[in-house]
Length: 76
Ligand SMILES: [Zn+2]
Picture 1 (cartoon, rainbow, N blue to C red):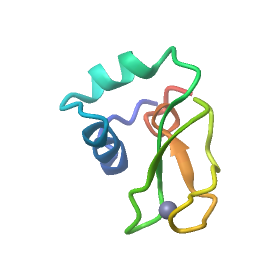
Picture 2: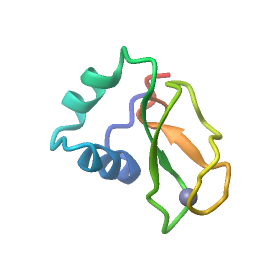
Picture 3: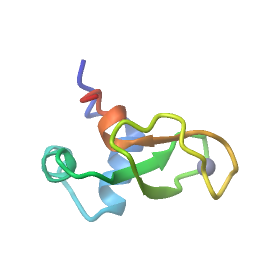
C-alpha cells in the first residue's frame, strides 16, 4: 500500500527541494541511489542510499534507522 502521507517522506521531499511527493517519487524511482531519511524520532538526517534500504546506519544518531524514500512510500 502506498503511503505518500508519511511525515518523514514529506520532510525528505522538502529537503530534496520538492513540494510535491509524487514528483519526488517519479524522479528518484529509477535511480541507483535515492534519498533516504532517518526514521528515529527527532532525527531527520538524510543521505543517498540504495532504493531498498530499510536499516541503513544513521551517521547522526548512530541507529540503523535510515530508510529510503521508496521504502517509506511503500513502492518497494
Ligand atoms: Zn538518525
